Structure formats: C-alpha cells, structure tokens
Length: 486
Ligand code: IFM
Image (tube, rainbow, N blue to C red; front, side):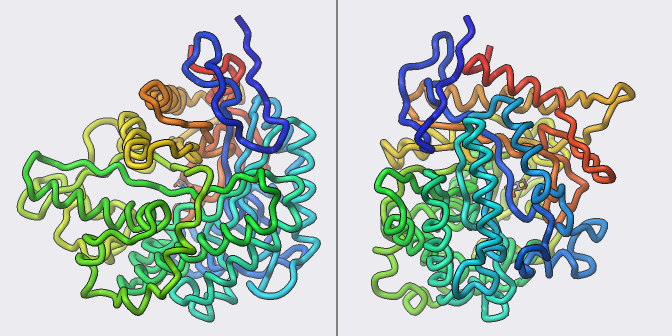
C-alpha cells in the first residue's frame, strides 16, 4: 500500500495523528533534513553580510583542516532553488536551516538588512511552494565578529543582542515560518568555543565556557519572549540540544558518579534552567571553584530562561562512555571533541572518556543506535509530555563517486536505518517524537574538519559544486514515500 505522508499546510509540525498503516511513525511526522548557514551558504561578503566568528576562525592558520573556510561553501546562497528542487525530489516534508545573524543584523545591533532577509524570504517561499515546511534556527554558531570583539557569549549583553535579532527575524519572516529553534547545540558554542577552543572563537577558559553557557541560556529565554511577542500565537518554538547519552564504563559507583558529572555539565546545564527553572545543585557544586554562579545568574534570569517551549530538538550521533580515573583502562580517549589539550568539560578533570565498542564513522564516532532510543526515552521520562524532534542525526563516511557517477553509501543507509528504527522504538514506548531531520541534506563545511568529512545524503563535488544524490538519498526518499521503514 502506498501512503503519501501528510504534509503540514500551516508551516507547523503537527501533533501526532494515527500511525501510518504498517508503520510506527504517525501521519504528519516531519521527514526532514538539516543544514546550517555557514556550512552551506558561501557568499560571505554579499548583500551586507559581515564576518562571523567562524569567518575569522577559519581564516586563522592552523584552526581548520587544510585551511578550509566557508567563503564559498556549497554556494547555496546562489543555488538554493536547485537545492529546494533536490529536497522536493527527495520527498522531504520539512527542511531545517539556520539564519545567518551577520547577514540579517551585521553588527549585532540596529535595524535588519533587507537584502539579507530577502534571501530567507525567497528560500522559504521556494520551500512553501514545494510543500516543504521550513524550520528556522536562529543561531547555528555564526556570531557576528563585532559582538565577539565586545566579549561574545562571555558577556550578558550578547544575550540581549540575540533577543533583538530574534525579534527582527520573526517580524520579517513570521508570516512564512511557523516553527523556530533558538539555538543549535549551545554546548558546542560554550564548551568547544570557549573551553577546548576547537571551535570559534577558539578560547580555552573553563570560566568563560561556563559564563557562555549561562548567557546562551539567557539569550535563548529572552529570544523565546521576543519570538512569542512577534509571532502568531500558533507558532512553535524550540531549542536544539546535543544531549549526551552518557554511559558508565563499569558498574562501579565511581563510574556512576562520572556519568552524573558529565550529565550535569553536558546536559542538565541546559535542560535544568530551560525545563525546570533551576541550575542543578550538583553542577553548581562541581564548578563552584571555576565561576561565581551567584554573580553570573542575576535575579529574574531563571524566569526568562524557563519560558515554556513547544518542542525540544534533540541532536544525536553517538553515545559517550566515561569512567573515573581509577577505573580507566587502556583505550581511554583524550580526543573526544577534537584535538585540543584543553578540556571542554569544566570541573571534570578526573573523568576519563572511552571509545564505545564497535564500528565507527569517518569521525571516529562509535555507531550505536540504542543511544538514540535511550536518549529520547530519558527525556520523555524526565519531562513527560514534552514533544520532541530529532533535529539532527546522521553520519560521515568516506564516500566516493563510482565510475558510473553514483555514490554507493550503504554504510550511511545502515546507519540511518538503525537510527530511524531507534526513533520508532522510542515512539512505541510512548515518546512524543514529531519529526526526524537527517544531518545533512548535502556535504558541507564540517567546522574544524573543513571539507574532509562528508555527512550529506547528497554528494557535492567541491570543484564543480555539482550535486549528486547518494544511494542513501534514494533510500530515504523511499522511507518517506512509505511513511516509515519497510
Ligand atoms: O555539522 C555538525 C552540525 O553543524 C552540528 N551538529 C553536529 C554536526 C556534525 O558534526
């Protein structure tokens, strides 16, 4: 039986309806793919855009593999119509992309640049014309450099600047975009950007990282307020977190404590204030020697941060295995988040990271789909009734174009099959998961790895910029057409 998945006509991700016959996935489930502005757009000096922290970082020698940068990326800024056609051919019902803050409000202050907004107007019009629901992320790591020069996320003012930018974007695009995400993976912005320094702006200070985390949380909350004020009441507002599915190396109590600590500084530092209105007491205790939390968290901040959201976005790639130092065995990893002698885990110096067993992707990330089911069910149990979207999931592999011009990425198909199965299991167990966004629509600039890692379902030739759907793209379009796995 051929089932055409229900499309959302309202620009919203619908609440679950009856399951598609023969499938676990509900009718109206968002079958999506995701990208981010700096990773795909290029055109970094066009139409008023000014440098972001990633322009500056990627042009700093030694920061990105091969000295790559996003100057051209995959030229989506000029090729978006072709890219939307690819999405439509795939049968995507939704597309998650990010708005470039330095395109819309170049100095992080003042009025919006219409030419920057026009690009997103044209992109969303094209999506809507093809029946694809746009999901816009306001911040996927491209802070205007101008704001970084004033202290970036280590200073409170940036949170207020972010809310102002959110209001400008919502006022201009709220008639076309019904579903909004404030931040993508604030853990990376704070702890890779200001802690280990492997991401822009490349700072290596545990105190700055913790301050950045709070100001990102505050920016999120203030932006939720700004979005609610500017958007229709029906708008859906989300936050995308790369929650760590943390597992102990052994059953020892000290490993359980290692899990607790990484869960605190990796996950609950965000879910605590956002979903419960408080920072976890154990996090504050673990990091009290690094930052003055009483001075950092000002009266009223937690009320702002905990403004209700409609959906939680979850990004998952691999589980995280930890132990205490005394339980560490051979095989311990020091490179869990890129090559840096500085830790992205403030206050957790005695915790050792381990490679989970089994096959790995080209990122050297262990493949374990059970982590996604567990993660979705953990969130479901901790926050019953909270609707979720898997806003990113996917894998990099060393894809090659065959002599016949096709790309046989059967390893990616296996990864996606297992992870969609993991989502189905979480839905069967009661989790309210409303969509899945494959990372990524197409090969793109993979941050500090440059163009060396390919996550796309669509191959991009970086010389010619020709796009070629891989076997996984064809496989995914069959899944979408059926409304679920076979
Ligand atoms: O490419 C990134 C994306 O920008 C954020 N989440 C993880 C992806 C793969 O590393």
